[in-house]
Image (cartoon, rainbow, N blue to C red):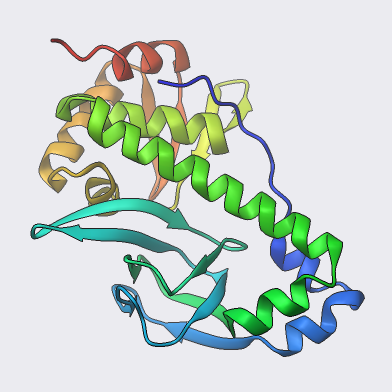
Length: 223
């Protein structure tokens, strides 16, 4: 497990709303989708860049009848349709789309937007690498602990009681990400709660009470 720490990324939506980027914003088309809708499939015929305005998306690969989650996109995240990946709405979602060539031509004229794009894509790649590491280098019964640990490092908010984490994902969503069943993930979360490692605060919200112990569990796969 890596020693990554949370680093705030530039908010792409905030950058787009600035006066100097109004021309680019005007070229973006808004599309809305319901939860569980499959927005894009591999090699989608439209070569688009899209930015998540509201909601949450899962990017995954289909391999031999199995799904490999590679990224979770939220507000401000950017992605392209011209890949081998599927893009699914984990909740009701709105995106802003633009033809890729036009978008990058316009974006190339604005340094602040370029920096925000690099920041957003870098954060997404970091999350993707963490997801793949979790799936391939951790044994099954430790993937949930590794998932929570990485999320807490990247997105957690420390407070007096521990580290607050709003991942906005259901247990079923987490199961898809870690490549396990909903029942197994639910059981593992319950075990972490019983051991005093974390506490479920609300739907999609958790309090990591013992980060050190969570790290130990995430790294303790037996041979």
